[in-house]
Length: 508
Image (cartoon, rainbow, N blue to C red; front, side):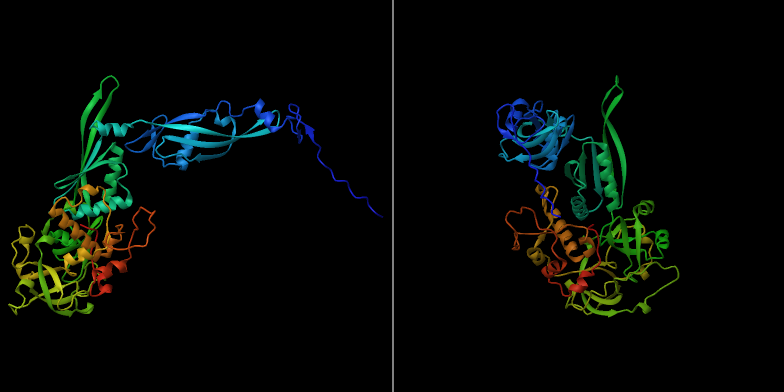
């Protein structure tokens, strides 16, 4: 049996009721051109609008009183532009894109594609452009700055030391964690820094951040600026006075006897190896380590016996390594460092080299770094007059003649000239304001080179003025984080592996 082939169905055509053009059937029985002449689906949607922009902070106003930072042709700016349009919810938004305009023209154009149902089921799509005029308006924060009444809370960070290495380290931590986002102004003070904020909550968050990175304590106070007795409202200026512990890296401290006993019987004369949110101590005689929190320090407060500026340079004449089994141990002793090696070291003062054969003996925890001919920085215990009440309680017969604090790696001037990396700054204009601050800053850079523990908390950038880097010219940002191997090669250290294990810590 043969089947007849099925006839293919074809859709018929109709004439437009307005112009008579042959079209496909639709519920309106009109062509698209005639429908557009009869209906305008963009009616009620404004074709022009106004955006308010603050020149001071480069933010746009989102009514009623929210200022948002938006880049040109960003999705945040596009969302703000769409919210400015009324009656946009009555139609279906299909697409929205920016039309390019000159950045300085103060005009922003957005092309919108919308759809709407007309004439009982027919869907009409239309494209139109909305032009936004950018007007300048100063925000409240910038207005306070111009009126010299811009801050409502200030955090006064202070440290009773003779150098600013701690604050250079804090600056890098603030930049890395972007803790200065809500800071209105930062001012240098003789003994610290002042951070100004627009409200108390931002200052409180900043104080909490500082407490997580350095051991410190703070006090609060407030000053009445004005008040309204009718509405019972008060306007205060708040002050947070924050004090950092006056103990820094490479400082020698003398502990109270009770505190030394509570820390596992550590020697009362210790070296501060590094500062994080706790104080890290190490005993040079047996490499015993201990950690001290800020609360414990303020309860049993002690001060530095010797700082980095009071150290003397010595030359290593001989090194005799000590096995772990030969080190002195006792019940209840605290933890011993696994990164250090004990050694008996014979020294002579660099200024007396070749003039005497009376070598000075001491025991050091830096045995893995030292070899004959090296230069070290030491604290001359025998020939130094120390004014400290805890140090006066020590038995002078049991004290070493010198204490080795750190090893000297090369010439400082040569290292500074060959340094091919740099750091960012919050306020570059105040960098290197005085000779003393410049020396402190160079010492901080040397600590970063010698100490991997400190370096891991800091963002390091290539210095394009000192080295040639193949980078696209359109990229204006610095190339971050040179490798550890490149940094150590710049130092020209004797032993890269040993130098990478050098003890140190966050930059105070």
